[in-house]
Amino acid sequence: MEAKKSKNDQLEGNKTLFFQLGLIITLVAVLMAFEYKSYSELSFTDLFRKMDNTIEETIPITVHEKKPLPVIPIPTPSINVVKDLADTPDVPTIDVTANQQTASPTIPVIPLDEPEVIDDTPFIVVEDMPVFPGGLSALYRFIGDNIKYPQVAKEVGIQGTVFVRFIIERDGSVSNAELLRSIGGGCDEEALRVVNSLPKWTPGMQMGKPVRVSYNLPVKFTLR
Image (cartoon, rainbow, N blue to C red):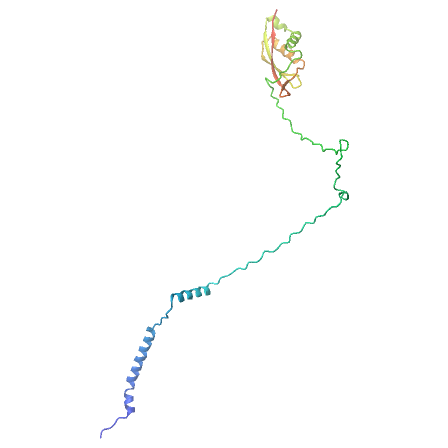
């Protein structure tokens, strides 16, 4: 009579096989889970819309509120209306019937004292040359009557012409007499003495004003 094996004994014998199969199935399931990728079907419109929403969420936009400018009140000037000028003592009364006797005095204009620039350089030629009282003939007569021939010049026989230069001032007086040409023997000193003794001239005029004028005068010494 054959011995019969029970079902429990068969299950116990296949227990290792079932365990190995379970591990293989679990490993395959895990590998399939990692390899599986799911792609969501999005249109370009949805994609850009999603990007816009992302930008709006990440970048906040700050809007500055415009504050109104403060209103500065402008003060209104007060105007006082004067009804009667007679009531205001500060306002002068104008007399429309004023004549020369009642006219108000004018304010004198005081001219500024400007320093007058005077040029002392004597002129040689001017509009109106200086004039000796009585003219040139009177000048030569004055020299002939007042000059004295030096004794040394007579004894030695010195004769000739001495040239003297002098200045006729603004008041007509003679100044700064000097020799331009000398002959010696005392004639030079005598010519200077006579020139310095000349009376006042009529001064020279330039543009209506008296000016200093340089003048040359020959004094001739002649033995007779």
